[in-house]
Image 1 (cartoon, one colour):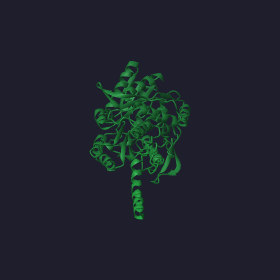
Image 2 (cartoon, helix red, strand yellow):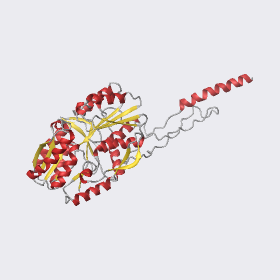
Image 3 (tube, helix red, strand yellow):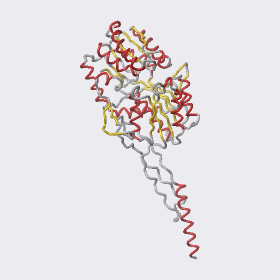
Length: 443
């Protein structure tokens, strides 16, 4: 009899762990709606844990009651990679990725940068994506900006992994081609900006629009469409349109040659075209020298190429946009905090007034490049967690607008909305290629 009892006890001990393992259900955790740009880590909100699994037979006294799963603050399973340009080329995009790494940790968010000469270093870009593809925990890749050669790099990833969510921001390659590869594409509504920039310039009293670029950028379809629409809008408004060419920062002289040209040529153009000339340039490296020269000559500036209060204005006006926190990340790099957006806007307004330029400088209130990183990242979280459509080409636009609204509120500018529209080219609509635009503020 004792042997029988002992055998029963041993059998029960072996069965119970397997029964518990089979009925345990992990809770589904929703991602936080937005992210504060200051990079001090915070704990994301999580919904209540899911209901505990129900025993197969509650009336059976020998069936153990299944405990609720322990709570978790993990917003998504696996890891998300964010790829940006180097900090010297696109600081806002770099900082937006850095903020997410510092918020969620390097074990959850991977930050990689494209090579500085990306147009000539496609093989290096392919290597970066191949390295990421080898990570079995990788769930999504957010690329901001999706520069030339991004498609080839993504092809290398897709050859190994077809289960990864891919988001492009500011794609430089053919829209139809990028739409085949990415689950979500985001950009400023550059075709519409061709009109809104002119309308804003006219409202501020401009008599001429000066568009500064170079052939490589004019080979990007959406940038060329913006230029063409700007020319047409200027003609309709009855003001002059002038197209100026500057050295390509990817050329032999690099960024220094481009910036030197802007510093030297802008005063000459103001002298020839007049102070009521509104300048617009297509490259980030041009923004600081262009704003500086506009301020020095009394000309006009409507908005940066990548619209944002953080882009160009602070450096050109001697303001601090990023402040050291005194804290360091795992690579012993000091973590930077962005100046609160409402404060920066007021500091910019004061600097413009001090230069007697009130009403001649304008721009978006929302930092667009950073917003696109957040939109891509948090939409990827929703996709990973299965709370948005999984089909390629289908996007829940309301979720994106909610992400932007929450981000704007956390920045301290509640009420800012973004108008999102799908890209339409030659009658073909790309519903997962969304173009955004935000109203301007005048300093």
